[in-house]
Image 1: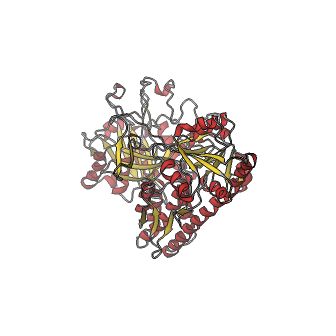
Image 2: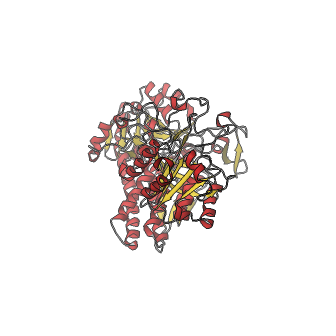
Image 3: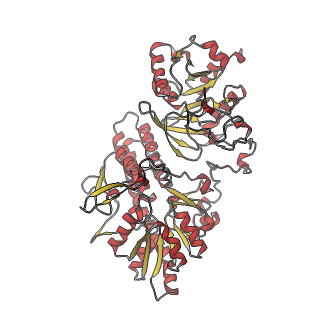
Length: 627
């Protein structure tokens, strides 16, 4: 689209160097037009995370080029494939809500798997990134062509005035490579000479409507009016809105739409006033594995300072950041919400317009007919057959404190509470995550990847080595190195109470930093509170591929100081405990014995082995009940 008199895309290759990707740094708009260069996968990761680029389609294409840059960095690496898998995990962790991110990364991995040499994989990733960029442009153009028919029909009904369109956030060309999704019908109507006017929501707290949508519409000459976020309902009641079109960061196969926070309220107002509400949905934003948007789509929570401060030009023409709330105000900043399909008039895709339901989508995308959606990551629908055989009284992430598994616990304090001064935690901090957990909620891994670890975990529960204390706090966990991706797969936090764990109770730790006391994980729930200890074992012993952490008072007392034992003053789940692994590796025969006792973690025992069977056997060889 246009910036002044020049045609411009949001992302393009450097004209003289194919190893440099150029972007518009959108953080500076509308007051300055600034471009930036991406030269490494870290650059691409930060551009996505820090919102130099934003909008689901653009995030996806940026990640695709990030994978290409990763191949250039890994060209001389001894383990090329492992480096690429690590880059993939890092990029996917940058933002949680937009499905395009993982979609684009997976598309790049699939393209590279078709060839063998590093040189061929570099070429495949480059060509595929280019293909995804051009497909995004064409898909947005097609969305606009289909959406144009809606605007044209409204223009015929009301020829005496412009068609009044309301949009929320920025689903314009700045959110894509070109054209945009929700704005593509607007631009094409404008080019076709149809009189239109756009109501632009400011979209607090990042003001993408005020700073981006208003700017790009103005650059193209499209008439618009900027309004406060809460004005939309009034305009609809006043007969000043004919059509609402929004974008989407993720749409489920059932037609639920996740978009910028506040979209749901616009849909409610539109429904109440019988105004058509459409979502512009490129196929890359459809998550065919999800069926319930409200329950399953991970909603990003962003930093409090976005709400606490505002940034803009001051009277002197300089950028200034000002405080608009009490400095110590308690702030919640949800980035997105979900509009249920029942409130959506239709979905505008590159294949056509359809009803917002599974049947409508499958008519346009028949290749997905017959494919069973993945088990909902956060489903609590225990009538669903996927939960057949599971004790419905103990949901994996329940906060139902009437449940007997929580008997004796203060119902005002969730299991994952970080309020350590509360007496419910007196004398025990078992199960409490003490590290910074950067968690991206995602569907479970396949049963084929988890069958062995699930079997061993459930056996350990029956033996009482994994379980739950009388006050409801769970204990015990186990992990295996992930293949071929980096990191490890580990049981999730507070899964100890479950008599039968399933795929939805394991997560993938993709990265960690002991010094920073941080892990990054991706899966249905957060990783175990003991994850840093597991991470250090894998880092210290390349030959170790499985770790089991159990609780057994008898075994703990029996083995104390007879096998490698951590210092009593070192608490579990801390960087200090992780460093104890290093010490024991240097001072004892830890790797050969494959077992250690945690003196500062009552009842805690860890075994490790070249595989899960070996770690299990070491445990059973020492366990009193097995002798």
